[in-house]
Image (cartoon, rainbow, N blue to C red; front, side, top):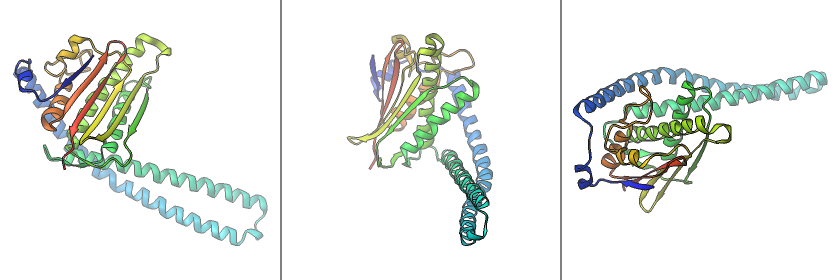
Amino acid sequence: MTEKSTPNTQQQSSAKYPTKEEFDKLLLQQQKLASLGMLSAGIAHEIQNPLNFVINFSKMSEKLLDDLKEIVNDVREHIPEDDANEIDDITSNLNVNLQKIREHGERAVSIIQGILLISRGKEGECIPTDIAHLLHEYVWLAYHAQRASDKSFNISITESYQEDMPHVMVVPQDLSRAVLNVVNNACYAVTEKTASEGEDYKPTINIVAKVEDGNLIISIGDNGCGMTDEVRGKLFHETITTKPIGKGTGLGMIITHDIIVNEHHGSIDIDTKLNEGTTFTFTIPVKG
């Protein structure tokens, strides 16, 4: 079953929207998110400085190690062969270790920069955004969040991003929230199916992004438990959740609809089949 959600006034007027109490809960949630953003920015700043030192000292140490290798080579004829070979092994291992320290340090800095981007973004402000980077960061954030609460959770994630995809004008802190909502639901769907299918089932989430015909197209698909027609019909217009109490608020898809359809003037296609999986496709017009 494939359905599409677009900014249609007639469709929205007949839909059932959340009650005042539900919107109050949503407002409280947004306020908590804002406070969390300020806290995250402060923590990120504090972490970034020592990380920069780690990266810089690893680079300096690599240079010193190269100098040491040159000195050893100059006096190699005066060093017993066994000792020279041991020095080569040690310096080689040190070089690999320093490269790993630098790579992981730079990776951590990249994550922190993403956190700062989200926390600093002004409400509703579109900025040029590296979509592939945003998707990669938040898809894996959702995965690791699930792993933190369930050590047995393990899935296959495939990512396919258009080569040399141009930066697209979006509100990154909001688009990332929409992506998180959908990926979290996908993680839950494959977890539920894993419980019923057993070891023969291979849970998979597929992420695809490209710019085509003047639109940014983001597809997030899973091979989880899918949705019934009833759930699909209420997804964007009622506070509905298939998760146990405490696992979901029922507001995630309403927020996602607001971000993609109302804020970015895009559309959401949903292709879902019970017991086979669900694919969400965001289509967002690319601003010149």
